[in-house]
View 1: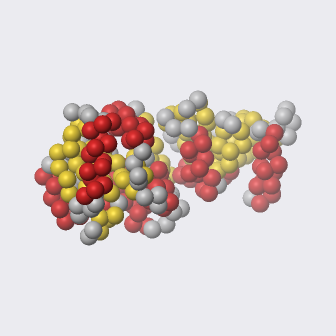
View 2: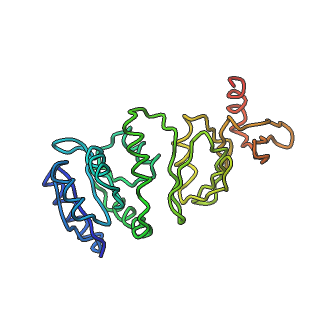
View 3: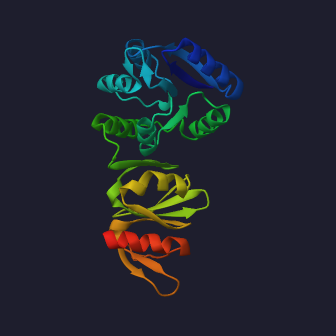
Length: 252
């Protein structure tokens, strides 16, 4: 069994979440509940669970406030799943921090996906860097996040977004090529990272390639068109992306 705490200020939502877990994830055992920062902090410190289901909005503060208070007294190694309404800023912060979240109302299929991911990482106890990066981003109250957490079978890796040279699709995985680092393979699609990184100067030039324009060395028109990157890779440009890329290069 996997132990879990449920912290949400709405009793009906807590009961609904327990019903969903009982039906779709019976291996999860709720060992405690709280409805506020005040009651949640001591519960977490006294009885750290393997998984924490945490609402963002609590009666006396936020789920982020709760994590800040727990961090003052020690590091929390529980895997965290946030439960939230669709708040663009918070969701973006979760994605940059490689943390799982569920949108209200909780969809059973999404819940099962999250539980499946939790089973793969539950015993690694390496969630601290996720949480630290999330709180760093939340404190700054800006959405131009400078660092990103990438999670794979080896653990959690934090990188400066500006150090990412390019990303390459490998089926449902994405390989990151990063300055002064070995390539790292992440089990998420290139489309997901395109959505996160486009506003950071990245451009999708091909079905398989997302590049950081800051590392583009040359745009070669012959042989169908390709770019040369700072890591000396030659990457093809899809026909429909050529005009867009040439317009972007004029602005650099």
